[in-house]
Length: 117
Length: 109
Image 1 (spheres, rainbow over the protein chains, first blue to last red):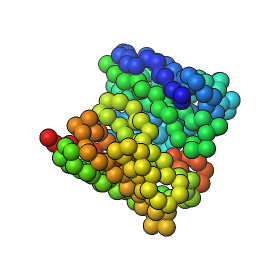
Image 2: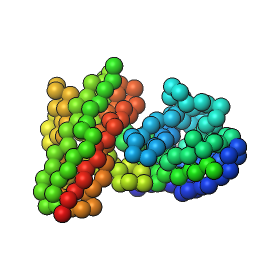
Image 3: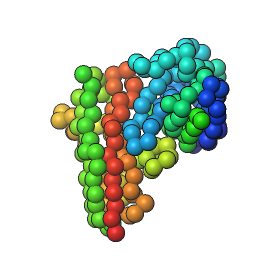
Image 4: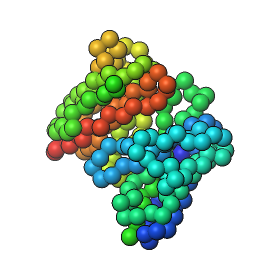
């Protein structure tokens, strides 16, 4: 159990376009989902925490108008990178927490590799 | 402040044992996680410690000392596929995960 999927796995887009990434918890309900970004050879960087039915909480330095997060249901959160630029090229990973589990571990999706030309 | 320290990189030999240390200073403590991340992939859960002591799971074991703010991940009978980054993460008083920078483990034949 505790499977998280992401779609798409990879995407290439032109500069100035918007890209939507979906994160789904397949076999559990996730009241909280997290969005991370990871540049090559660097550690995970938390971008925002998404709670179902409420606004996302963004980390310092992350532009909320550029990275739009929607968590409309207990199994789906979306991240939209608006007006993407080459510097937004990165590995975007979501994770979800099952509030019924005592351990509070985060289950990660497989990640989405974004390349902006 | 909140701080998690891990060595940046370690090298070990196939078949050997390696210990990856993690020290932390956080506002509150609700458990420590170890994750494994292969290059280009998302992290996968390895272990969880909330009480002091050793948790053993096959070739991997994790130890925690809350009074010392210290944990280690012990990998036995190393295999080439164990080459990866190992991430230490703490759940703080708000149940937020605080991540260490990760330790890149290189296994040599």
